[in-house]
Image 1 (spheres, one colour):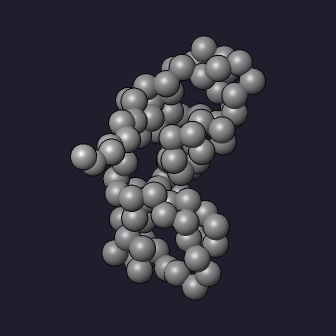
Image 2: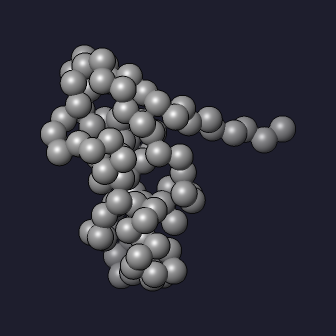
Length: 94
């Protein structure tokens, strides 16, 4: 039997919860979550956020890795992660 994690499409923000906390809980890169929801500030309690469905596997970046190595091209990296930034210890979709 294979265990499959099901990610909801939408999520209601709890009181005191930050965008970073939601990002970590659903293993979605923070910039992608913010972009998908048009956010430039923290969400408010009760706000419904769209949780982007995985575009690949979540991966923690190691030093020396490039966007092309991880996703095939810088454009694919941006499309999957909602950011052009790449740094060690960052969680991204590959």
